[in-house]
Image (spheres, rainbow, N blue to C red):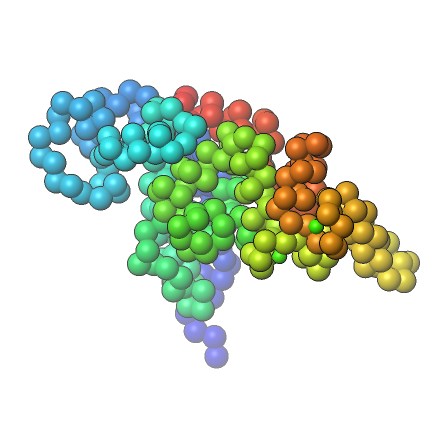
Length: 280
Ligand SMILES: [Ca+2]
Ligand SMILES: [Ca+2]
């Protein structure tokens, strides 16, 4: 006997996902949040102007105020301007509140996946991955998507992404030097985080990148060949695996190889339109 659950299953994705189509939607939600940080709808954002902060309640970030110290701390740690950081904090808050809505919706529709980290404030895996996909055009292997989420926030690996991790991660993702980006990509690819990319890991990462012909006797053969070719390219010290040094040496010589094991960085267009929206 099927009881009540049916209604939910038709719409198995919570409606909040449509919120994530693009960052402009987030911005649209808080019209006027852009640059002009004057008094607005809730009268919440004045603090950035400095003067009106009499009642310093030391509230947490999600109460609407942008703590100038936090903004300044993030500005020092990243390659973003003050305006950009303020915009990123606002997006963070929107994402976090989407996460809360989503976990409630999930809880209502299927109790199995429901409980994740409801108590930890941060951007959860579902929302983050949706953002990577829809805002940054990352179309990549499931395993890479998962790794990007897991390593994004160094201080909270695998947990919902906190504000600092969000902004610092984006700084590398969007504005990192070649070496910073290489360090990030390498962490993504190093599936077991032991400091080396092994043939097995490469195989997992590259497994689906060749189109398999139905008539192929051993469809994995092509992938194994590819792994050998790429290994040869990267394995500078010839020990059969790729260390971070091997990887950076190779990437420094040929920057295009930085994403040889799968896409984990945004392309230029996606980056440009993200900034346009951010400051728009
Ligand atoms: Ca490894
Ligand atoms: Ca090596």
